[in-house]
Length: 160
Image (cartoon, rainbow, N blue to C red; front, side, top):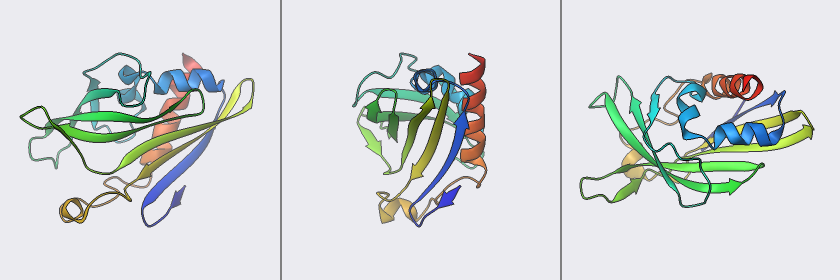
């Protein structure tokens, strides 16, 4: 795992083809099983991720969130099957407008052969404005989160 001033990343070699790993990542219904924090509960929008700009919502829970339960609206920023997928988390306001905090999740996949893929997961908060940094600490999770998420992804890709 590497930690920079504005991002953290981890890599893992998964014994599955890149297309299979990508398919798991492009399925919002799998994200709660991938998540290493336990915050992601369930996909609201269950359609596979197929295009940049697509919005998919996830029900979440965090004990330190003011409401406990909350919903994230994620906007797909990178979609390059089977090499990369990433999204910008945000929230839907009461008027239906989406607001994004500036942090991103990105998975980069490098095939190492027909049945093995190196996956790098990066959490980047370099675009988070000072107004959000005043009340949120980055990264908002412990150092094992990314590695745990990659292990969960491997279990789904190998077992699926």
